[in-house]
Image 1 (cartoon, rainbow, N blue to C red):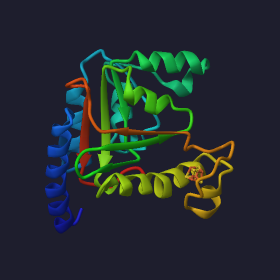
Image 2: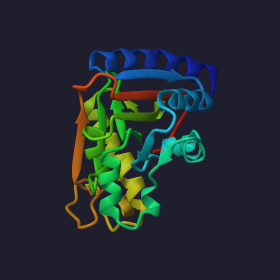
Image 3: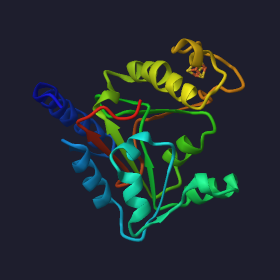
Image 4: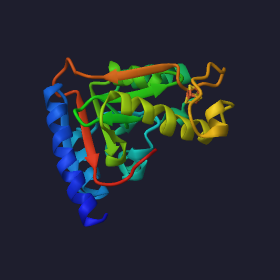
Length: 209
Ligand code: SF4
């Protein structure tokens, strides 16, 4: 990462971390993917039940592989045939790994979801939620974060899953109500009632989309 970008990311991350603290959430800055991985593993108790919701960023820093191969009980929803059972097991997990579709400089997290298994687990259920967030996802405010979620993250996800949505074809949001829409639920996390539940690791890198 370019030294000037790193400096900017460090300064911005400190502002985000302050914003998260004001919202009863914990923030951390990692200068590299390796530092982010080490921090995430530090937050997961040995033997913990861990699951996740479509967090590309967690894959990109090597966290999913480390959990699968480490001393944890990893619930891999892709390998469980009964999707409802997988969803309910995730809800009862010790740790849920996630990323955000976007977040604000003052610590508000924005996520959108089609099936809502991811946003429901973020909102409630797992004892701890660990977000891996590349600095590319930090936006000025909630309006900017919503725009990013709907015009960057959602179209890419729709294309990735081969969904028949307008954004798959045009690359930007048409506020559709198509059967395939992934914009069914919007979750804005502005405060955590439970201290120690939400942890956000900000990574000095571009992660996810
Ligand atoms: S509302 Fe429809 S067009 Fe807009 S991002 Fe969501 S799925 Fe795509």
